[in-house]
Image (cartoon, rainbow, N blue to C red; front, side):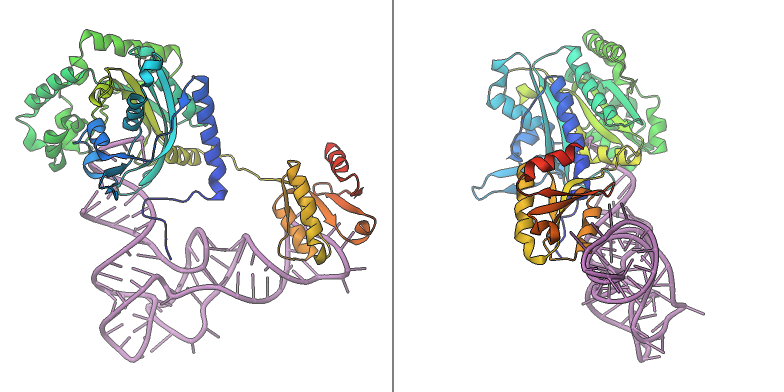
Amino acid sequence: MIKAVTGTKDVLPSEIKNWYYVESLVKEIFTNFNYREIRTPIFEETSLFGRGIGEETDIVSKEMYTFVDRGNTSLTLKPEMTAAVVRAFIEHSLGAQQSINKLFYISQMFRQERPQAGRLRQFHQFGAEAIGSVSPFIDAEIIVIAYDILSKLGLKDLTVKINSLGTPAIREKYKTELKNYLSDKSDLLSQESKVRLEKNILRLFDSKSENDIAVMSNAPLLIDFLDEESLLHFNSVKVALVENSVPFEVDPKLVRGLDYYTHTAFEIISGKVGSQSALCGGGRYDNLIEELGGKPTPGVGFAAGIERILLAMENENVITKNYDVIDFYLIRIESDLESKAFELATLLRRNNYLVEMDYSNRSVKAQMREANRLNAKFTLWVGGDEYKDDSVMVKNMSGGEQSKISLKNFSSEIKKILEK
RNA sequence: GUGGGUGUAGCUCAGUUGGUUAGAGCAUCAGGUUGUGGCCCUGAGGGCCGUGGGUUCAAUUCCCAUCACUCACCCCA
């Protein structure tokens, strides 16, 4: 048996309504904040992601689905959206048309990691990119949207964490300090953290090893190195969040894995999804657009994982069971009346009713069982005495009342039945 | 890439201290009199017991390998 590729999942009809629910709420809230949807191709030239996300990041160095096409071009299935949106922003000169572009997306992403709870190789994210303003209120707006969507979906066990990463210059200075601090302590670190020391020193704060945590507990913090401007910006974001009722905690150890962040970084985590607890992450990226060849333009955005959100909703029991109902089920009494039943079904369907009938020549009893299983509001009986009178019988499935309606005035009679 | 757990019916799971036709519940299908559902009753279909090898008179059961799924590490949504 051929099965879905490792780390990919089919969304079956029984669960599709949950997706519709999330997607429609996402679109509604983005629309209220005046974000417009952007759709970019599923793959891009590989070099985009290296330049955008950072060659040294895990995503680029070991997780990308990269292949060479028949034209010998190296292409990559997009592992995240920001680089792709920025590419489109530059390519179509969106910045020349208005001072700020507020964009959102809902799309699938690909990363070749080992799957686990809340982590797939093909997964879906919705997110936003607000490009063109340095205002801290845009940072706050992005966080408000993310928080509003998650809480309107019914999630309660949420924590918003924010931090400021300052500017690249500040970060470099800080990294040097951190290295100095650690220079005589590296022997105490775990094997993994020794690697981090070289590759991504900021991540040392994330370690779960007790030794590492002890070593890092007295380490200098980036937040103490921020210049006045950065502090002012960070402070304005915090004040705006308070004024707009978004609870948050400042986490000086919050470091995001993508190279392009500046100033604000944030994450929203759930206590209900297992080890991969981040439902959403984002931040400001004031240098990315220039690095990708555009005019210097500031930006801020976030991305949220739909599968993780659905998992959290399931574990918080906020997924409401959807009881599907149909308007009519056609009962064909004699088997040779299938064509007439089909004709009436089509007529009703063209009048926007949800209609089903039997296509397997089954007994009346079996058809009734099916009508019941589908939660039909009415059954329509074609055949027998009524049919000889050029009529059909209508049965209300909840109350059981039956009545006879003439085929001559079929549409208007049906309307009357439904109005009762 | 590394480690733990699990693979028996469409789904959730029993089971065999190695022994003859491998079970249950749910789901599906049919029937419980002439054209009537839900509840109930009866019956049916559906399994290379993940795959390959080994031990044995005999393996779904024991051993080895392998694959898949799953959780965790790394990292991230």
